[in-house]
Amino acid sequence: MDLDTGIDDALAIAYALATPECDLIGIVGSYGNVLMEDGVQNSLNLLEMLGHPEVPVFPGLPHSSTTDSFAVLPISAQIHGQNGVGEVEIKKANRKAEATSGVDFFIEAAHEYGQDLIIVPTGPLTNLAAAIKKDPEIVELIGNVTLMGGALTVPGNVSPVTEANISQDPEAANEVFRSNLNLTMIGLDVTTRTLLTTTETQQWRNLDTVAGKAYADLTDYYIDAYKVTSPHLGGCALHDPLAVAAAVQPRLVETIELNMKVDTQAPFAGRTIGDETRVNVPALHTKAAVQVDKDRFVADFMEKLTSL
Ligand code: BDR
Ligand code: CA
Figure 1 (cartoon, rainbow, N blue to C red):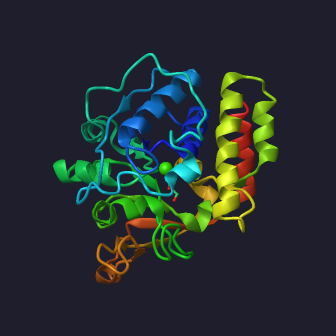
Figure 2 (cartoon, rainbow, N blue to C red):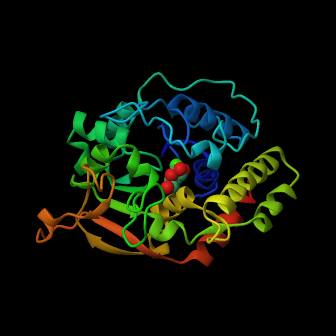
């Protein structure tokens, strides 16, 4: 996983840990909801609270490949809290991040696990783009990249055409989309249909555990933020957990296959769209999710999180 650990990233960690088909071999830190180093600390703290201090966490790149001015999105504090986890105080982990960089971890993991490796980025694509630039061979080795980001059939969430993760580093995202990686895009098209409300979070609070209470509190912060920013949805969007779910249960989503690009220039910088230069190329590299079995996913998500 490659996370900018805010609230839905935190939900994705818990979901991955509770998914038996998923062997979480590492978390790479990114920036966006919070600064990279704060996201890394959040991941370490959450893993320890959830009883999984064995999962290594690697520092990633702290800002985009072209600028350092958008290391944290201006609206993030409102949605994820200043600390990224809804101002909930989670006990500080007893360990630190690994010394190896997240970029090198991706390269090493690709060589070690090959087609068994699925990378799930739920933040900007800066680390993955840097890894394929440093070792282009990994493009053919990695089994699949299932990323949360982009929007194809609905508007963006930071501009009419731009989703938050892609907006942070359109150049890196374009490198990833235009590479030969086997990609699955879990964009706003599907993530804004998988919603949670306080009815569900109350079930975690009722567990009467430290993790259950913390997860209920941080998710309620996110639900409250959605009431202000996206009241039409009627809940908070499970963006990042849905990417983990689609990585291990691809049939949860319906996809269309195409070759995509990301616009890097104004006025559409950050837009994810079909690549007109590869329209007639027979090999299609991206599966973009356009439908989701939302009831099945939310039921599965709740069953797994209440088991933690
Ligand atoms: C994405 O942006 C981030 O704020 C969320 O964690 C999610 O990954 C949604 O656009
Ligand atoms: Ca995220």
